[in-house]
Amino acid sequence: MKDNNQITNKDNGKKRFNFRISDEVMDLVCKWYESDNCATRNEFMEKAIRFYVGYIASNYNQDYLPKIVISTMKSIMRDSENRHNRNLFRIAVELSMLMNVMAATHDIPKEALTKLRWDCVEEIKRINGTLSLDTAVDWQS
Image 1 (tube, rainbow, N blue to C red):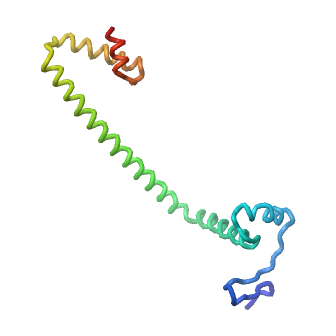
Image 2 (image 1 turned 90 degrees about the vertical axis):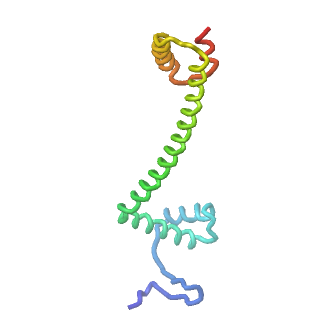
Image 3 (image 1 turned 90 degrees about the horizontal axis):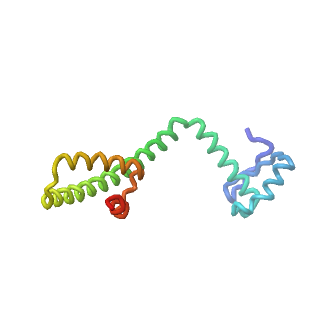
């Protein structure tokens, strides 16, 4: 059964459909259709309908969308963790090399190391972990 408001146009595969729209909504269409790069008001309304139908469909697919978001966030976090872990490993290797050179070239008593460790912990807390060579030189002066 064919609706009286619907006429098929075989030239472009579209259907003509008459409907009523408030003046306020029509004013919005006239105001915004060009800013959305639409050639016609009809194109703008068709895009608006597609957008709204997608919005409604997303409400029915709430289980699907969060899974995609969670999966994406997990992937981002995994990549970030891998990058941080590689950097921490690289820094640990360099620090180990430095400590071994220091241990080989200096005869430091165990008590002095223990005191230095506690002093360094307090200093790092005080400067909130933003250690630099300049800070260390100033601290040793």
